[in-house]
Amino acid sequence: MAVDALLQSSRLSWFGTEGKDSDVVLSSRVRLARNLVGVPFPGRADLRQLAEIAQQLDDSLVDIGTELGQPFDRIELDQLSALEREVLIEKRLISEKFAEAQPYRMAYISADTRVSILVNEDDHLHIQSMTPGLSLTQAFETASRVDDYIEARLDLAFDETMGYLTAYPTNLGTGLRASAILHLPGLVYTRNIENIVNTSPQLGLAVHPLEGIGEGAHLYKVSNQLTLGYSEAEMIENIQTAVGEIAAHERRARKALSYLGKEGVEDGVWRSFGILSYARSLTEQELFALVSRVRYGIDRGMVEEISPDCYAELIVAGRDSYLKYMVENENLSAGEISGIRASRVRAILHKYRTQG
Image 1: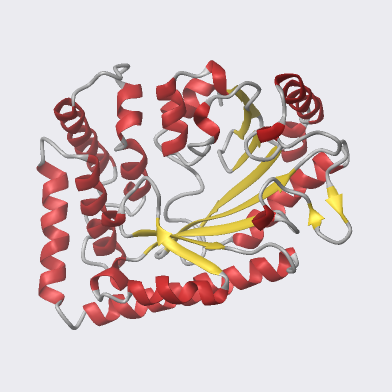
Image 2: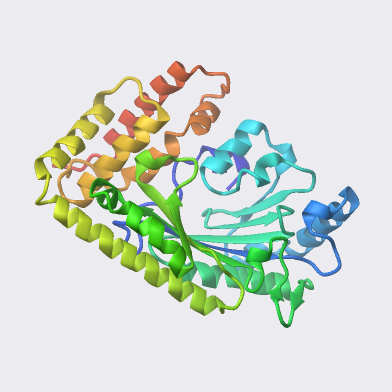
């Protein structure tokens, strides 16, 4: 997939309605932090050293596409416009910090967008694997495959006592961060979400609204907080179990709403569907809130007129920077963006209408 095609795509194969527990868990992610031996971390390296890091990783990744059975795009961040970098942030393929476009920052992104390898962020190397549904084991296996490929070609910083050495002490050990994105309208509507958020640190987890989206979308990220003193398998099992339990709480909350306040919830779902279907102007935050209610209605069997596959495309294709990029005008007013968004939403809903 060429860079233009990557930016223009309105779908992400790892985000949506596929996979285990996909009625609640939209995606899983595993990230491995790695560093080269004998070179300062990027935050302390000079330009010559950053160039050396980039060259070593370029040389080692030359056949990564063959190894994983699909092509990779190699993207130099400082060659992208600010708008193009913002689109990649919206798609969660790079972080805001990585997008600052410092010299010698590169991203290798697979054709299916499920694997990204980021060079010279906080660490020399971040390997990121994303999968649909609750599938952290699968994501870890893919990330480990990339890790093994690189480790066979480069000397990575590893201490027998502390494990993999990383720029931040909280990543020491496995260098692994695992997370999942959950859609939790039931827990929000029943006002039980705070219980989940407040008790999660006791389990070594963090639960918070998905950054860049806002609480109105009812999307929450669940991630591990500690990496030292645990094996990769233990960490994956811990968060997999915790996410599964949160998903079970969400389903119970949704069931409770079927009996308590049913009419109000259904009215909110259908009002949201009507606005999305006919509105001529929608802000980004309005879109997130409305789409969340409609997705809830689809999952509860209230809305049968459209396929659940529309959800992921509405989230991706309704973002501000994506819309500006698609119409090739980053100077659009807020009103103009809202009008373009509403038109795009109507087209997507029409595309995913079911027959009959």
